[in-house]
Length: 123
Image (cartoon, rainbow, N blue to C red; front, side):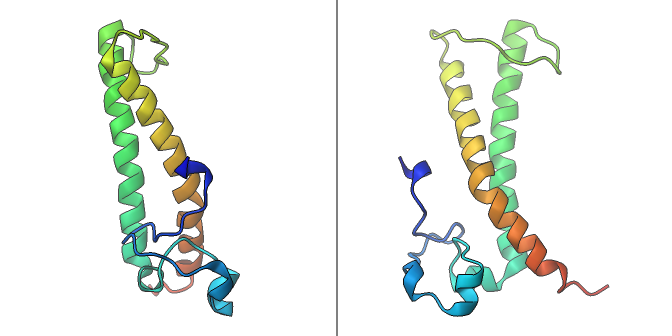
C-alpha cells in the first residue's frame, strides 16, 4: 500500500517531512521527498539513492542468475519460470516488484538532483 501513497519521510535519512503546504517557495518549486539537509548535500544524496537503486538491481540480477542456472537458460534469455513450489520464485517476483518501485520513486528524484547539480560542477 505504501507504493501508492506519497512519501512523508526523507528517502535518505527517513526523517519526517513537513506537509507540502508549509514548504517555502524555493522548496515548493521542486518538491522532492528529501529533507532540507539531504537536499542541500546533492552529491551525498545522489550517491545514497544510486546505491539503493544499484542494490535492488543486483538482487534481481542475482536471483535471475539462480533461476537461469536451475532452468538451464542462457544469460540473455528471459526467466519464465513460474513454479509455485520454488521459494526462489517468490523472492524473484518480490525483487522485480521492489526494483520497479525503486525505479519509479528514485528515478525522478535522481533526474531532478542531477539536473540541479549539473550547473554546480566546475572543471
